[in-house]
Length: 342
Ligand code: KG4
Ligand code: ZN
Figure (spheres, helix red, strand yellow):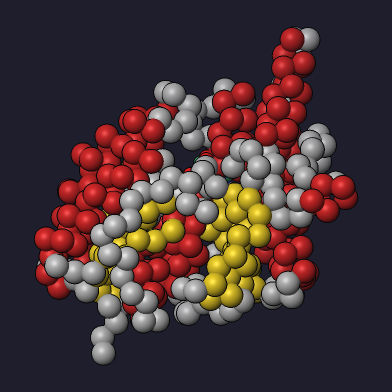
C-alpha cells in the first residue's frame, strides 16, 4: 500500500504553513509569515496574526497543491495543529482544516504542535526516527525538553520554560541593544564579533538547588533582566556599550543552559540521541555547542533542515502520516483549538 498523502495546516503563531507529504517524503512546504506586520510592536500580536492567517490560508493551500503536483481529491487525509498556540490563530487553521476535510470527505487528524516539531525530523535525510530520543524544542513560543519513546504514542514532556521562551529572550535583548524584531538573527551575527566570556550572565535554574526542583525546566526572564540592567547602568554612566561582548555573553548563557539540560536528560534517561527543533536552532553557537556536547557525551545529534525547524505545515502533515501508518484513528470533527494544550 502506498504511503498516505497528507496535507498539513499550521497556524499556531505567525506562520501560515501548508505542507504536503507522502509518508516521509516532502512534496510541498509553503509558508506565509506575518512577521513583518508584528515588527513594529516588537512581538507577535495575536489579533494581527489571526487576520493574516485568514488572508493567507487559501492561497497557501492552492500553492502547496500546485507545488506538490496533486489534486485535493488525491489526499488521503487532512491534518491540523489544534494547540498549543494563539487561540484566534489556531481557530483559523482548525476551521479551514474542517472545511477541507468535510468538503473532500477525508479523515481529519488534529495534532499537537510540539509533537509536530519532532515529527518534522522524519522528513530529513537521516531516515526514520530512532527511539528513544530526547528532543529540545526552542523557538519564540516554546522551550521544551521531551522524552520521545515513540512519536505516535509515547511523548513525555520533561520540562519547559517557566517564564520566557529562549527566542523571546533573544528578541527582548535585541530590543535593549536597539535591534529590530525578530532579534535572534541580529544577536547571533553581533555575537560573532565579541567574547562569550566577557560578561558572566546568569544561567537560569542551573544552581544545584534549582536543579533539584527544575532539572529540565528553563528560565530566561532573569537573564534578560540581567542583560538589560548591565547595559542600562553603563549607558547611564555614559560608557560605551561593548555590543559584541554583550551579545556573545548572552548567547553563550542561553546555549550553555539549553545544552547542559538537554545532555543531562540524555544521561539521566540513558538516551544516546538528541533531536533539535524550533527556529532558535538556527543559532550558530547553539548548533556548535550541541555538536561539541553531544560528541563528548556519546550522543547522536539530529537537526532537521532549518526550513523544517521553524513553524511549518509539513511537520504537521508528517506527524499525521506517521499516525496513519501506525493505524491511528482520525480525530473526528468534535475537537476545537486548544491554546493551552499540554
Ligand atoms: O520557530 P520560529 O520561527 O517561530 C516561533 O517562535 O514559533 O522561531 C522564531 C524565533 C524568534 O524569537 C527569533 O528571534 C529566533 O527564533 N531566532 C533566533 C535565530 N534565528 C531565529 N534566535 C537566535 N539565533 C538565531 N540565529
Ligand atoms: Zn513552533
